[in-house]
Figure 1: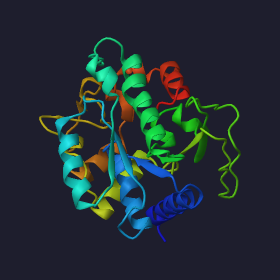
Figure 2: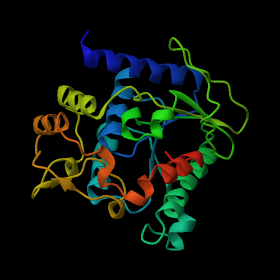
Figure 3: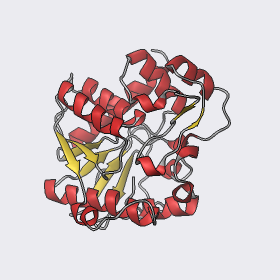
Figure 4: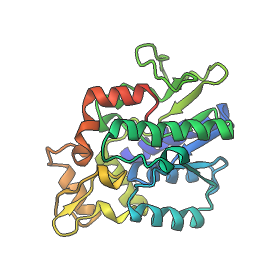
Length: 266
């Protein structure tokens, strides 16, 4: 078993453990490289047919390429996709232009709250990693959220020897993070090995590419000549630029991110 096999094995174990403990389970698919990799391993875990719904939080401001990718692979991979949208706020014209904090909270976190309530889901699989952001490094594999989606990061369950707490009260839910132990470069090495399709925005065009994608107004491309997976892996082995450098910096501020996540942001 090589290094990638070891990472994959632990992730598949956590996915199966989550399903064993929470049959009312969903997988959050942002259609970025990490959640697509998580989805790929969920398909492996259940021999090609995932037995729970896939949730895409659609703010209405995603890149066109993301919508095309969703349409193509939801069908090819036979996914039961739930589109999560906060229609009330979108009809009021809420957008990232004036207040990214309010926009993220309403169009992502509140939309997710509505979806969990509607479908009675008790746990969510998410593709976040510890090395993405200092605040995400505080997460556990199995992380409880109360009925208001709040995250008590100071009093989280202890996780030893791959034993995960799944005890929750009514109206609470768990966030489960099977990719916590992966690094950005691991994800790309795995994508290369498995030939996982990813959105083309990650590859350099005209000297720039996106390292992290989400809503189009909140992302900017970074300088890069990496137009193949091999070049991306080579670039990541030497770069000093953080992965989320191209995301809206007011949202990436540690205090803002901590506040967003304490309210239920992904």
